[in-house]
Structures are given as C-alpha cells and as structure tokens.
Image 1 (cartoon, each protein chain N blue to C red):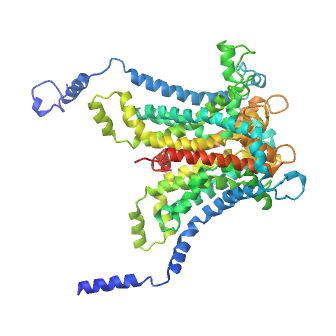
Image 2 (cartoon, each protein chain N blue to C red):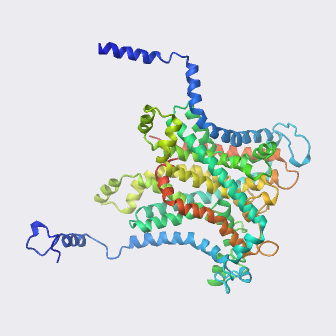
Length: 320
Length: 309
C-alpha cells in the first residue's frame, strides 16, 4: 500500500509541470530577472551601449564642433591609427609604465602580507592593517594631486629633504620627478604603489589565511628554513592570486588616464602623453574634437589590450 | 608562594605549576635577540610611516601662515591664527567650492544607494535563485572587467548623456558611475552570498517566504559586513571620480570637488597653497570618516568572501 501511494505521489509530482516548457522558463525568468533588472539597465545602458556607440562612431568622420553631420567613411580611421606615429609612441609609453608598475604592485604587498601575517600582537596587527588601508580610502585623483605636491620643486617636501636637508642635490641638479622622462613613470608608479599597498595586501592576507597551518608545522619539524618554506609552500599557494592580479593590473595600468592628465596635462612632448591621453585630447581637447578618430584610437588600444589579456590567460591556464 | 595552584603530584615540593611552565619556556631554544621580529616590525613601521607622513605633511600645510605656504620648509615659521582659518576661508569665501562639495556629496550618495541595491539584488539572483543564463551574465560582467571601458566608452557615454539631456547635470553622473561600479560590486556580493548556506534559504522557502522576503528578512542581516564593503567601494569610486565629471560637466558650479582640486593651480593666479591644502583635507575627510566608522565591518566583510572575486 505504502509503495503504491508513494508511486502515486511521485506520479502527481512528475505530472504537475505539464505546462509547456516555454511557460515554465518564462515563469523562471519572471521570478528572477526583476532582481537583475537594475544591474542590466546600468550595465547595458552605460557600459555596453557606449562601447557599441564608440564602435559605430569609429567608422565615421564625426567631428563634434564642426556642426556637420557625420559620414560613414569605412575603415579610414583605423588605417590612419595604424600609421599614426603618435599613437604608437603613446602605446609604448603606456607599456613602459606597465612594466615598471605591475611587478612592484604585486611583490611589495606580498612582502608586507607575509610579514604582517606573522605579527602576533593583536593591537599592532590591527594598527598596521588600518594604516596601510588608509590610502585606498582616498579617491584616485586626490592621490595624484597629493603626489604632484610631494614631487613639486617649490613646495614639495621630497626635494626639500634632498636639497636643503641632505644636500645631495642642488637647485639645478634636483630630480624633476614628473618632468624628467627617465623618472616620470617611476614617480607615478611609486604613487600607485602607495595607493594600492593596503588593498593588495588584503588580497594576499586572504590567500595566506587559506594555507593550512600544519603544512608549516610539518615543514618546520623537517627542519626547513623560513626561506625554504616560503618558496616551497607560500609561493605556490599564492601563485593563483599573483597571476590574477597580474592580469587585472596589466589591464588597469595600460589604460591609466586620470594620473597622466592631472600630472602632465596635454603636452605631447611629455612621457605622460600616452595613447589614452591622445584619445581624450582628440575627442575632447583642442581642434574640432574629432570624435570618430578618437573612437578608433580607443578601439585599437582596447583590442590590443584584449589580445594580451587573452594571451596571459592562456599562459596562466591551470595545467592540472 | 603559590599555595592554591600547587599540583597534587608535587605535594610537599615548592615548585608550583606556574613555575614549571616558566622553566619549560626558558628551556626552549631561543635566540638571544629576535632579529627576525625586529626586522619585521621595522619594515612594517617604515611602510606605515610612508603612508602617514605625506598625509601629515598636508595637514601641516593647511595650518601654516600664507607667507610660509610659499616656502618648502616642512615646519613653518608661523602657524596661521586662528589655526583653522584656511578651512574657514574656503568654506566662507568660496561659494563655488561649497557648491562643488555638495555636488560631490549628492553624486556619491546617489551612486552608493544605486550600486548597493543593484549589487545586493544581482548577487542574490546569481547565487541563490534559479536564474536562467547565470553563466552568460557572469561572463559578460567578468569580460567588462578586462575591457578598458573607462577609456574606450567615454565618447559613447558623452553621446548617450547628450542625447538624454544629461550634459551639465551633476546628479545624472549617477548612471555612468553606477555602471562603472556594477561589475565589481556584484562580484563582491556574489562572493559574500556564496558564504551563506543555501539550507537557510531552503528552510525559509519551505516556510513559505517569498524570495524577496527571504533576502530582506533573513539573508541581509547575515551579509551586512559584505554590504559595508560594497558601500565603501562605491563611495570611494564615486566621491573621487575625475574623468567623467570633467568631461560631462561644463559649468564650474556643476563640477565635483575632485575636478576643482585637480584643475586648480596653486600660487599666483589660483588659490594659495595652504588654502588648497585645507580644501584637500576636507575632500579626503569624508572617506576617512566612513572608513573609521565602518572599519571593523569592512575588514570582516573582506574576509567573509569579498576578496574571492
């Protein structure tokens, strides 16, 4: 009897969704998509559409200030970008910055995290964490402005210490941190490291917390040195975080723009005039604001970055 | 000496448990000076100082007298009197700066509200609801993180805001700002929601609670630390955004504070240095206050899964 009843219930349960499949899937859409609606509106409206609109613009000769309607000119803008020496110089400048910036943005926070993870004193541990997180609470443009002042020749404390206190340089030989092409990117990288210190340390601390402590205990019993333990345990456990951060930071470093505009303006001769600044200058700066060409610059830059990011993902794919 | 905590087996012996432990500790091999400990703390202290000193320098700058403001000495010959005169001056004598400050407050608050609601609802749907095409949506959001949207999309964003009549309207910055935050905030919330066991939600479902009721009544109190992380992340991003605010606003009184500070020049012809420094402190203070208040939940929220993203 009991089994009969069970099969009967089973049958009614199976029979219940006799409504057609499309009704059921429509119902599950209707029940869940209202939650995603705001995300979709913002994401499509102000991320996907602008990108598509920039793509459309890049095939036209749209100049914002000439009051004429835009004409479709095919791939002309792209042909011009590929032959544009200023664009390639800008890409090279951005790449130089990326090569200086990314290793430091990963290795310094990793060092701090490894040191901080060992601090046993609860008060000091919290103190370091909070202090290191302070810069990440300051918005990026305000960080740049702060460092532009620190690097300043007239009021900046860095050159004050180097020139007036230590006397290493005199007024003529003092480092021109943001002007000297050899120093500019290093100066901006230092500023970005300062900003990202605490935030990136948090990533590594989360990674370190996930390593089982008995691995270290076992290694210590086997007589492994601290150095050995770092390379054979910690490094491998942190590697996934390092690789993800490398890809993410490559993406943000190649597309830096606020920093360059605030620190260097729109001066083509300065090393801060990268492809992003060139794009912005073309679209919103002087001349007749050739938006069509600017959109093409943006798209060529974005496509090159995407290719490198895909290559990095392929390189770092998990080989298990 | 210690009478109460003498171990039974040591009766009659003068050695208490405590001193046994002390002796055991003393026997452990220990370097005479713990160089490792000293090196660790000096490196960490060095980095902490490198964070604090530049900020201390700006605070000092905002308190020096105007003639000292043009010098590069770190400590001034004269402090300004009254001490907070520059702050007062910026607030009272520059109505345009005050307008820019309130513009920033307005945009930041709108963006925080919009981003938080979007991220909580979206993360919930992506983790705990039987949403169709979860994978596609997550993939699109991930892809957007690796696309230089801020640069490539800016001509398109201008066009869209222009068409909607939003150029020169400060409050309308909330749309592109929330859009820039949406992927990262949803990922933070997704990580946090994954830490909530689905059994709790199933129990609520069996009790007949709707999915929205479950979210508000049961899940929200559990994930409040993660919500704090999203609030802080979106606040900092919106409070300091520069490029879009610069591009989409034409009039000086529609601009936000970072654009004002970023484009003002110190010295002759602009604001005097100590006054800009005072303005700067006022600009970074809201973020630091929010952090100081929410710091405990923030670090907890980061550990609860916000960093998995």
